[in-house]
Length: 249
Image (cartoon, helix red, strand yellow):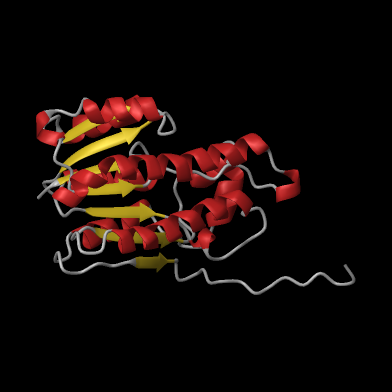
């Protein structure tokens, strides 16, 4: 057993991943914005098993402070799960809100690379692992995906380049690219529109947060000589769509 740091651990994939590891004997460091949600993890598994810090992952000073304040039993990190991320807005690029674009870039890209860089020396020393949660949106474009898809394409390529740079260190890097998954994702993206979320997932049998947690658990517990470098996951009901054609445009 080891110690895992999970970002975005207050809901969705992150909460399920934190619970999966804590429930199976790992120590878990859970980072997220919502202190009340994080407190539920501590109540469930105990302070000896879970350590939490509530802050906005975009705040580098808060991130550094949270790492510096880790208790002795949580300082030796073996696994980093870069899960924190969001999609904000559904508009086409020409109609989008620039502030939403910046929020996605700051969260999905800048915060992810910052935390990764801060932990790389320790992960190398411990021959640890990095699991980045990307998306099929980084590979398959769709209307309104613009900057969100761009940020996830970055995560996918960053993961591939990390593996090259970390060659020979023993550090494993995995990029997981989920497709349609029913969490709070669509509620966040639409500003809390439950009807839109319900319509999107109705009858689709989407990926669940437990599915992703089980996948991260499997990846992290493979023999140390194996690395799942890239894993695209979709529900059976979903597949890549065809190309668009605009007539007489």
